[in-house]
Image (tube, rainbow, N blue to C red):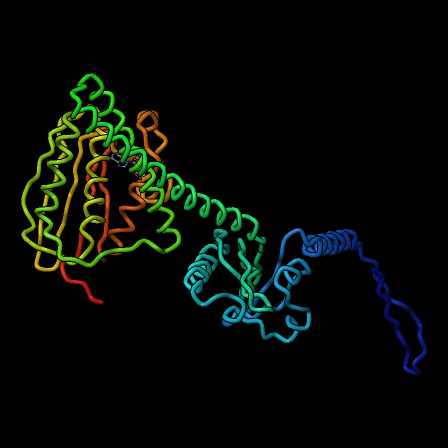
Amino acid sequence: MARGAPVRDETGQIVKWFGTNTDIEDQKRIEEALRQSQERIRALIDSNIIGIASNEGEEEVLVEANDAWLHMTGYTREDVRSRTLTRVKITPAEQAPLFERALQEVAAHGQHTPFETELVCKDGSRLPILVGGVTFQDRPRQIVAFVLDNSARKELERRKDAFIGMASHELRTPLTALKLQTSLLHRQLAKQGIQASVPALSRMETQINTITRLVEELLDVSKIQAGRLEYLQETVDLDALLREIADTMQQSHPSHSILVHGAVRASLLGDRDRLGQVITNLLENAIKYSPDAQTVEIDLNASPETVTIRVRDHGLGIPREQRDKIFERFYRAAGPRQRVIPGLGMGLYIVAEIIKHHGGTITVESAVGKGSTFTVTLPLTRDG
Ligand code: ADP
């Protein structure tokens, strides 16, 4: 960079020049690198492989969006320029808690874990998306969001759910007929005094009952997904229910002693069969996942407001990192000992859903190799 300044005499005539020459090669190199990186960022945004949008300030007004984003949502450049696309406007109200959590994460860590949500498109339709965001600038706060169209995956999920619903429905009809015919045959043969076939028929009936349970569980899972699981409202004598289930389970599972401690001495309003399903499932798991133990225990407690049912086993236990996941749909623990034990990962999902419907909670404490305790707490009186 060259600079020059004239030196003049009293009459204003230039008599000398002062000049400097500075080497600015480094500065030029930095400028060029900056220009190139800005071009690359621009090219990345304009590549339109994924939607990119940035929003600003408290209301999270959309201030920039690439073509991919506009194409997905149907909004135009003019809509963006008008600065009217606030977060409230372009996201469904019920998704607000998800966005608020993401914002907190952004504030704390500068970015948030991508999550599934929806955008409200220009025509009012909803677009399933996967979104991840990073802080771009602090004041005013500007966040850049990377948005993937998630509709193909959601559609596949929806079809899979519909399939599970239809399949369980279709399987149930022939199963019911099979069950009926088998017990008819059982009775006829017994009447004719043909004893030799009775054991084979009994084994058939046991297997049919196992399949029926699995199909019923599949149907329950699919109804829960669709928000269509129905519940009765009746007065349930919990002690009687628990003892009945413990007796039945004791007969079908002679490998373990089922010990019941305490009593709740209370009734609650709910669905007897569904609550029974909860206890049966927890007991079955306790037995199934403690192959080397002799006992499983049920502890009953009550306070004026709640009843607490604990199902305790002395079995394999559940590693800490899996304890939240076991209540998710189709989740099965992957340990080598668990894997050989049959199951489809539906039981605890259904259990958690039934308990939630009754206003209660379920938690688990566990020590690997020592055993697990599932604690169900149910309120005795419920509002609404
Ligand atoms: P399933 O038993 O059919 O796999 P569940 O939904 O009942 O499905 O349970 C989910 C997972 O939680 C199981 O695969 C198992 O790994 C774990 N689990 C459930 N109950 C117990 C238990 N009492 N002890 C150890 N692991 C358990």
